[in-house]
Length: 144
Image (cartoon, rainbow, N blue to C red):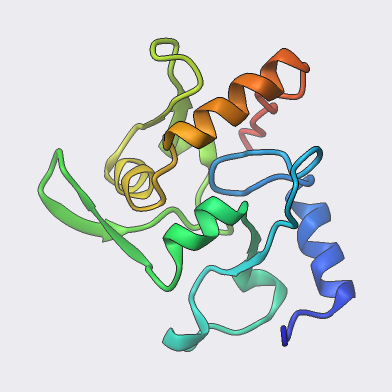
């Protein structure tokens, strides 16, 4: 049983504008419900308060699991993962032109998050292509 109330889920979803706060996949048109992620996992002392919650697609949520760090291949270091409440998406990620629909990590945090969450998994690329054909993707990235 979840400790996330319906009101809290509504607030998290509204703040996320109905999409995954990691890979930006929209929840609209998806088969499954997007889980609410504890950015700092409960197992590490994270609370179920709004500031520690993010909307995540099932794929990102499953790969993030209880991780808060990832490995950046370019620098050879372990770094914190992207934190949707503290970081701006556009500071750490960009959309690749080639290959299309891939997310580029712009810095160690971005690269480690892309790798840990497997944000360019072939299934996600297919979903992004289909959503783009329906003019539902990519979402606008708010730079603020």
